[in-house]
Length: 444
Image (tube, rainbow, N blue to C red):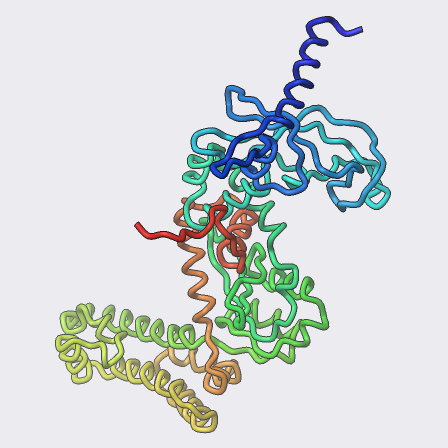
């Protein structure tokens, strides 16, 4: 038989629950509203019954129960027989001013035939294995899209590691399960997130403009995991894949989606030419130092790399001096500019003819960097010319990569590819959150 103190406490809680249920508040129009209804409206949670409300040291604690009688499995949400009852636990809800709200309940455990085990029941205010309500987690994810985890943790009163766990859980719940459906034009690129060459490969949907897949590494095996997840039937539906000239990505696409047209990004093609010019310039500077004529080539790098319409008068003078004094370096500059002019063609036939002539010119130029580049472009000529016919590039992918780099700098780096992938999908995967407050209808 319970002691009088425990019996009195139980009776007091019962009376308080009854008092909460019947306590009414007056409104401006003379009507009355139950206190339990007010609390339910403040929480903004459906399918919840308020049993008790009281203050504790860390905020307002609301004793609540689900509105349904038969428990549901927390994993598959199917009804099942009650196995036993868990001890009391609390879920953190959004704060009202400086007062945090807590929901307290003793969840039942369900013997689920579908999941073949015993699991904690589903509650209407939180996800499975979470100690935060749905609204709290969505607020944390909404803020994490716009600020670093430390600031989010300080604003919500939680640890920054907890913010990362919430982000991963929200992304798993809110990420579009059909994001890999209907893909036919994709872009592939890698991005470094830590030192010692640790990378994440991102696949972007050009049509919807969002990241649809991420994987750790930048090898052919990494991209192969994307095709494994995509499936053979959907891989056959791909028509174009934009990328840089990574041998790993090329081999993966040729093996898993051979029908897709590889489109090499124009920026990376011209980047190879600028690197070749710079390599020739450095070799000529070294040779000029030995002859005592390095002064004529001093500070000529940017004059050689700039486009003609971006040159200043001083750059033009340096270029004219190079034309008079160093024919090899000026030939390298002309090769670079000629390659860019070939990519400006709007029709495929003249672009192909120009590229063939350029390759022949580069092979007989007696400039080793351009001879190597000519061999590369001759081998990958189809993908280079695909830019002329489609005008597709990796510009969208590079733009999203810049956003990812901003996320990485804002977080001062990530310890794992999993954490970075969750942030990429949160900020670049098309997940949209509505702030919990209504849109303002007034102006100050």
